[in-house]
Image 1: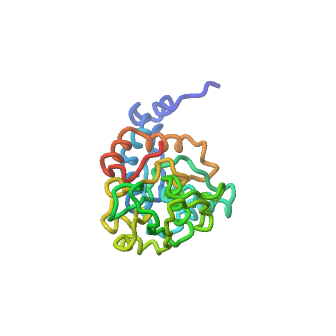
Image 2: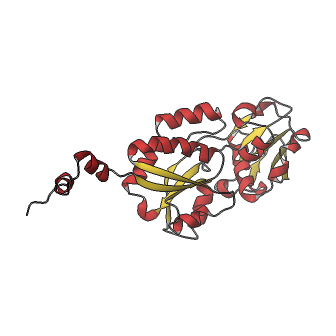
Image 3: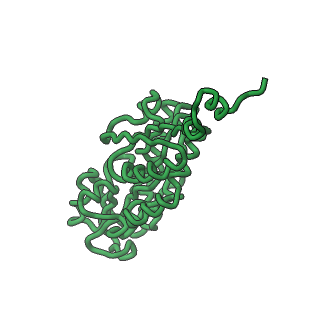
Length: 265
């Protein structure tokens, strides 16, 4: 028996061709958890772009600290966009095989700031550099200092580096550990400080404008879009990734953030 097409079936039911076409192309609803700020702002642009790809993005903006990965694992979300790749990998070890990275999104850069010099090369020998006290942020700050040639870290220590992993410090810098929320105010007392983007922004500092040293866009700590592992090959995931990497989104990131949010793709 010949299989009838959707249009033929619709005609038999008295439905017009336009109605049947709309029936066949209903948008795929995708619920994405995001944090306020750049993640939510960029995903709002992705939401507009993805409509042309047949997606109906529903954005769920969550307060910092809410476990979006748990909601994703439980099926309350289809995707989550809020976390850097290093933190994601650490959580993935606790729940192996459940979630996967669909694509890198943006890097919210750590940066080196100073009230006293204009470039890292001008930092005085024996000067004081403030870094975060919190272990994960401290590792990221130390890698930034290493990449700018101010210190050298022991091989293999990068993603979990501590001040004890500083192998060479030829300029004799003193490393001062300070809580994240006190680093900006420490700029009046130290030669330079490594500050994460959220705390810098609260202090009126923009990485692309005010920093003397900036984290690379392709940092290991780039943010990621996560989905359930079983969905990774789904057509809607490919459409969502393509929408995120589209020209309108590239243009928005460049014009809105002026290199204070960086694009690794």
